[in-house]
Amino acid sequence: MSDPQTGGGRRGGGRAARAAMRAAAVVERVPYLTRTMAPFEILSDEALAAIEHTADTVLEEVGIEVRDYPAALPIFQRGGAIVDGTRVRFPRGLCREIVQASAPATYVQHARNPERSVVIGGAHTVFAPNYGSPFVHDLDNGRRYATLADFQNFVKLTYVSPWLHHSGGTVCEPVDVPVSKRHLDMVYSHLKYSDKGFMGSVTAGERAADSVELARIGFGGDLQDRTVMTSLINASSPLVWDGTMLAAAQCYAEHNQATIITPFILAGAMAPATSAGVAVQTLAEALAGMTFVQLVRPGAPVVFGSFASSMSMQTGAPTFGTPEPSLVLYTVAALARRLGVPFRSGGSLTASKIPDAQAAYESANTLQPTVLGGVNFVLHAAGWLEGGLAIGYEKFVLDCDQLGMMHTFVRGLDTTANGLALDAIRTNPPGNHFLGTAHTLANFETAFYRSDTADNASYEQWSEEGSLDAARRANALWKRRLAEYEAPPLDDAIDQEMLAFIDRRKAELPDEFA
Image (cartoon, rainbow, N blue to C red; front, side, top):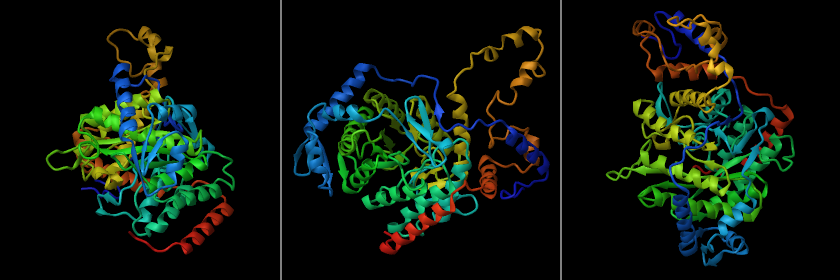
């Protein structure tokens, strides 16, 4: 049996040779995906209009509840909403009118390295890693609480992956750092160990402000009104927006930073049990949130988000990879296109606790609708386990491999002269193979996606090299990638200024772990 940490085996040379071949494969690094195929539509215009009409009825008759943030009430009222205590109702069509008047259809999130800036919206898709897990999992240590070292590891693994375009946000919760202070270490880690775009803190308005200040320093002292963060703002479904999220959203909007306005829904518990009902409530909640952002600052980038999972009616546990969330995703993606704003949803989601067959099936059943539905910003694209409670090192590597396949898939069919290959067919007599033809030799490096985790050798060769399953192969890969990691350039003066700001802010904050 081989050692999963070293990748050794009785005939390690064969594995090393194949790994070298994979490493030599041509990988086209792109800052984001541009899809060539039309999004998959499941509903008629009439059905979508019915959902929009029903959502407007909800906003008009039921409205939303604003909790613990009275400052939001006059903002809504000035925009034309009807405020009754903490309940806010919207005349029919008002939210749509406000959002469509100023929210951009696409925007650029600038990265510290301009070559890694991303376009969010339109025909583009941006993959970002897991978000928010308090636990991590790997084959060596099993499930445990996440630490700052784990957080930094996943930022590094995201940085070196050609298939992840965005560094993400709270890739895991570093529970060894006080809640009151960990946002500083997380934002700094994104700026220090990566030069891709990232997300700021949203757990308090002042933490959002800290994120903006760190970003200002990290980008050289002046953001120049550039959008450099796209941060996650969740509704408290059903039909509640709370002070924590609204304060963070207001801070980011005031500084022209993007927000992903996302109802987080467990169907049957936080929304109706029907998929159409979930779509109605999602649209109503998201419209209210996006309206708030546009009232704070017209033109501030905003993303229509949807996170909807089904649930086991026997246990109440969330389920993933089932048909109903896919139906919601396709539906809400179409609603976002009709509204004219970017859309966030999907990922590589699973309820499995380990990177097993359940994890693979459920993640694939989430990722395929994500790509086919035309999602613009994909959070949880790599690493998600246990319904989001954990991020897995091996799962992260396996998911990235699938994201690489999606890069090939979205390019669609090549119908150029080379793609149609008429000359190759003409010059190759019937009955002869194409292995040695000039066309094959010219295309062999790029003709097919090359997986870096799958084993396609014979049974005998696989057995002689240690009989490693996919998870154990991924175990060796993440360790090698961390060992080979090299940090992107960062000016020493900027680094020192960020550290000084962090030290000053930490001295002002209490140590709170809960």
